[in-house]
Length: 298
Image: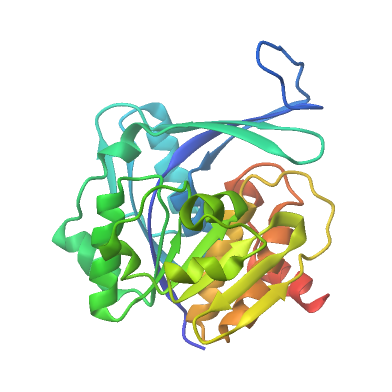
């Protein structure tokens, strides 16, 4: 089977992750139990996850000229991602402050840093997008850059998957280029005014959509009338930080490899479940064998 070529346009952050028994309330200081500093950002996470799921992947993003930027590029490259199109801009890299409680729930504050400087795409970057089988994008970078990438991909016949996180107003030209929208319940509510009770409301925006619901699984819907609930794979949850990124990347890889889209959602669900068993973002993203093992178990 030919290796799927994935291009990811998105954010790269350094994640500073603290574990504690509970998430602190405003004004409260809480003693934590563990700390890790790992590369993150939805774009970088999804690029690394795509490689681990079996694809080749090029990452289009921006890092700062600080020490975090040096570490980010080294770690993402070491994961097997093509970082030849990763820009370095003067100033701070993106940083995410992540707090995780004993149940694996998290609270995150992100400062975009260099991600906000990813404005427009060069012809070389657009060539990378056009050469991919699947483009994966999120919304932690300027939306006009996401739009430019999606339009170039559509015109080249490249499949476009948009993980609309964080939710924001989406220009019509971006929506017109999207083949599959991936959102969680909060994002669905913000974009379509409906959550889990009406996943088909997302079809006003896109021809296909996946609504992820954490431990309640995911819904796949399309304009052909398909509406399928995919249960979550039961696992012990340690940290849910990058589960959505593992899910989105595996969905792109599975669909790009020729799986039926519903089966690709099931495989992606196994990837998300494999991810939550470990602490951290990029360090928790599963290898293909882990995904296959959980997929085969249900």
